[in-house]
Length: 211
Image 1: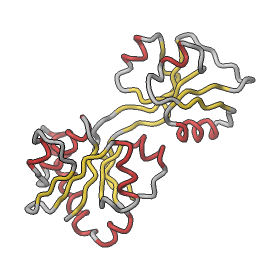
Image 2: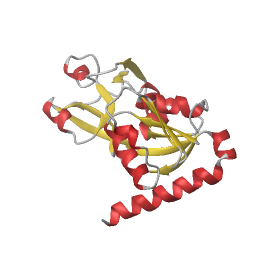
Image 3: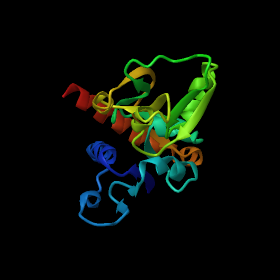
Image 4: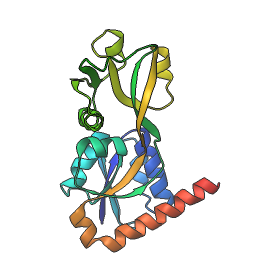
């Protein structure tokens, strides 16, 4: 069986429907229970429901052969895994945002509030910009409003939350979507089964795009 780390929540639901449509159905996944592991011998898969930010951990350490993680989580974690397919789900953007009318002072250390500290550090290092990271885990938009930071680095989907809090996107860092990833050792020994899954998923994605 292929062990699959499936993220909990909306993205996981979308990913599972795509997998089921590609022939990897496991009906128990949507049962009303607290189970975290689901198996389908017919499909040859075993699903683990995990926190989205933990998918890369399970895959990198071999507890899961494959998994689905957002590009943001992949880049923030720096996980040593194979990224094999862009599923095109959960599309959004990693952006720098600030209060409307904010003007950056290039001579002063920039205060950056974010939960994506590694992404922010790499981005501003590429610009040669000196920054101070303020690590937050939620309600990032509050930081510029309360003058805790100058800017934030965060995920932006529709931009509605920014607009409602008098913030705007200053620049886009990179686009985000769900990626199909594999443990390097698992891919070596299960290449045929994993490549078959990638082929089926690619076909399912094309069919959805043409529908």
